[in-house]
Amino acid sequence: MSKPQYLSKSDFQLASSCAQKLVYKKKGYDSSNDTDEYMLMLAQGGYIVGKMATLLFSEGIEVEGSTTEALLMTKEYIQNYDSITLFEPAFEFNQRLARIDIFVKHGNKIQLIEVKSASRDSLNPKKDSTKLNKYIQDISFQYTILMDVFPDCEITCLLLMPDKSMRTLIDGLAGWFRLIDKPVSQEREYESPNEYITQEKSKFKVPNVEFIFDNHTNRQDYIDRLRNEGILNYLDVTEKAMALESGIRAKADSYIKILNNGHEATSLDYEISKSCKSCEYYVSGNANCGFFECWKWVKEFPSIFDLYYGGTVGSNNYLNELIREGKYSFGDIQTERLCKNDGSIGPRNERQLIQHENTLNKQEWFSETIKKELNSWTYPLHFIDFETYTGALPFHQGMRPFELIAFQWSCHTIDAPGAEPKHEEFIHTDSDFPNFKFAESLMKHIGMSGTPLMWATHENSVLRTILYQMDEYGYQNSELKGWLQKTIKDKDLGTEGRLIDMNAFTLKHYFHPEMKGKTSIKKVLPAIWNNNLFLHEIPYLLKYSLKDLENQVLDPYDTLFNLANTKMREMDEEKEIISEDVKGGTGAMRAFYRIRFDNSISIEHKEELKFRLLEYCKLDTMAMVIIWLYWKYTVK
Image 1 (cartoon, helix red, strand yellow):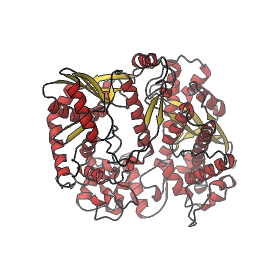
Image 2: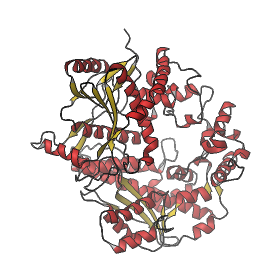
Image 3: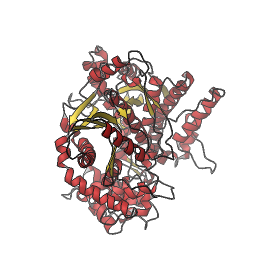
Image 4: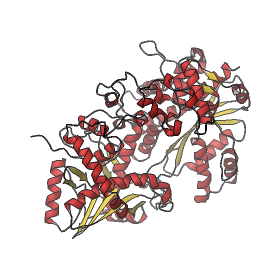
């Protein structure tokens, strides 16, 4: 006997973006969301906040097991108790299924509580309206089920989320919880409570979350502190959820028809469009690739999606026009359409035209003024990169959810023309608040001399945040405050600052076809490094010049991981430490969190993570040096 086909709340959310994705989920196709590092971090954060929320309900009972087991267990609890609080109970009605985060029933009054790890700002509610609308749709789906199951009950819908307007009084709150990984059993059904997972059987390791004071004699005192000094806050969304009810029911019925028709959506349920560019079911090199089932007449990912801000052209509809006409190649783009609605050429259109011409001609492009601009940068040149942490649970007393922590910087400095870069770095992994030490150490290193360079605006935003934190935390250092005010760009202060954004510089002055429509450092560096072997002969760049077994130049970031792994093996051959790579900003955040709070790993393991953090950040600033060297050499 086949298992019943249920439309879960995560199914509903996925299908709301594209009905065909529901087909691929039920077929078990791979999704990039299920291997994406950032999505993994979001998922893990969701489990931690979910655990924290359940601790606020001392009488709560967790409903475990498969969907079938949870449905039976939930029904038994409801029949036996008139008043009860359940965590993850399962309710089903006409194939609609929901496992509700927290369900509270007292007689004929029910609270449907949806826990989210993303934050809201109760003092500035308009800022969160788009995000909240998505969550309210999610809770409304669950509301329709409870209405049908409990037609005589009064149902209140609540979101329980971290509130950015609240500062915790708990020092080290993020360390009160510990993730313990466990693999998802392939034998059981699992409906993830987390919105980011899109697999029917996810490749995520669904963790247990341990409250470190569970066995403490004063456990209840700590829970009382979570309730009174924590950062979770309620938002009543009952009226908004009720207003969506009829539309939610209609959409759910249409998705259930897809399930009942053997998982085949029709052209009435979805259409290919520019939104397919970001489809999570595009998994390169996978035999069961959902994207190519939708686009069965193309052999490669459509190159029209490579156009810089292509989705904004023609009142946001030009790419869809091309798709409807069966035109998917970059060469099908008409240059006369690359303009604003009034026919004028804006900055984005200028970049689009540069990309179009030089992509088709397969040539590199430099602006006429790039040499002048490069020569205006005064020595010493300081190439800087920061690593920071933002999370739902604050690290320190007085912090808000998702408030920034700056824990690491790297700087390569070139003192004069022809000089080799000198490297300095800072990392703070102790238990105190690092931001002011971070900024003071950077100020001491680069001072007011020369030109500080960054890639994109993150570094400016970090220093701006630290400037405002000085007032918020009452930190006194007039020298640091003055330096920050002169260094950053800030509209409120009316300052242009000293920082040069190399990403913005790239947009104005440089293009290579291999960058496509991107200007991130991880796109610009390979385009330059792989096509200019003279850079590999520079003595201080030799260690980044490795090739694979087919004699192809390796991406410097891949080279870094090989070097780091080799060095760690040499340092710790007998300790058999196995650690995750630090391959990006998300990996850096996770490594920093583990160093600070994960006492399940050894000191040696933490030292390895620290080493990987330093090497990763160091490569980012060296990448900036490589790109600058190439520009300087080429336009000399």
